[in-house]
Amino acid sequence: MDRGTWTLRCHCCNRTFEVELKPTERVIQYAQKTPCPHCNTKPAEAKGSPTLWHHIIAFRAMTPKLGHGLSEAPTVRTGQQMDVTTALAVLQETLDRCDRKDMRTPKVFAALDFLAAQATVKWPFNQFRNALDGDGSKGWEREGRWQILNASLNGIKLVVGQKK
Image 1 (cartoon, rainbow, N blue to C red):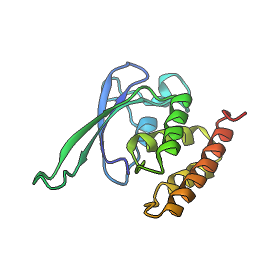
Image 2: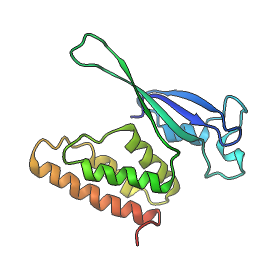
Image 3: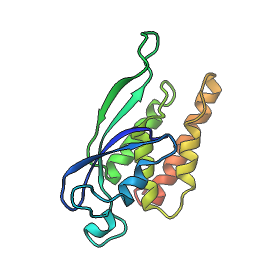
């Protein structure tokens, strides 16, 4: 699901490194567990806390280019350091645009993974992710997807303590 090359920044030495993921691998698992190739420090060891991980700072996907005879063309997507506010803003943008655009993007999945890693309750994250899978080819499907995403986002905000 997170297939492509991800750039991470180490918590300890602050240097960047890249990891290339296969279709079944998740970037958040690498950010939480993979040691830095420069200082060989695992994220949890960096500051003595098991909840820390390397910052996810960029993504480069290999996507097929249709109709031009090229099998793959790189798409570069850079981002800011992920925090709760940024991740919630990404999910809110997903809700706002889900009726007219396919929002199954690495940025959205990275935000979901980031927030889910901090939460003990997982159902709103799974529900949000599953709602993105519908194609929305009919009007009622788009409305249903919006309703599920809206309810899921409210659940996510409650779980991460951002809902008043």
